Length: 130
Image (spheres, rainbow, N blue to C red):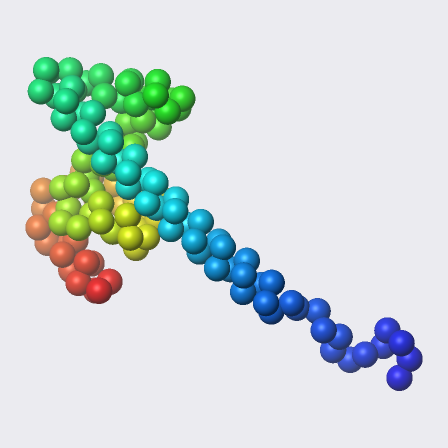
């Protein structure tokens, strides 16, 4: 067989691929942990401001601190409130069970029905994940 005409030349460096996959997985977990810390800090700030009847300014304060839009800050606040109301919600983000995008989607879908959902749906989801 002529040079360069092998049927299946070795193309994939499995070791490099495995290392890259492990790095991406680790980065995803670090992002989840950071997001959970951010949500907890937003909750603390909201509680402090709420005690002096300034809870409406939480999103604006968060927006200033994170250099994001007030809309993005309000989404963070909504996530923090919703996930803290669900048993194991923030812990699910912190452990990587829920990623950032999944937390956003969960908030969009469940926020309107929070009282009903927190007692019926989320415990089932938590049990299924364990």
